[in-house]
Length: 132
Ligand SMILES: [Zn+2]
Image (cartoon, rainbow, N blue to C red):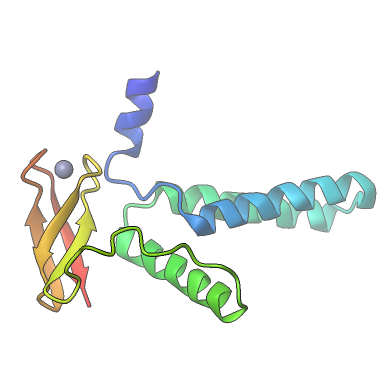
């Protein structure tokens, strides 16, 4: 069962901050609907949850990362706390750090702007990266 789940999620986006935000919103709507008993709220909650699940199963990782960044930036503008840089020692000027969708290892890539195809030296997964 666990193996099946790993195979299903290979190359897919998975959970991010926006996923937890949407799932949390769904739970709040569901709890609120115990009292409100509104079919509109019920359907809206299901739509929110469906979006969260479909995003996590998406293979279009750059697009999902962009959405997540938009939400994080909006949150930062609202004054919400941002986590401190977990890797302050990394040279982010000359290198870009991208996670391999196959094995989850972080690859250090030369920072050349544009779209590239790269191969993970650890698991051999070939995937596209976009460097800004
Ligand atoms: Zn890999």
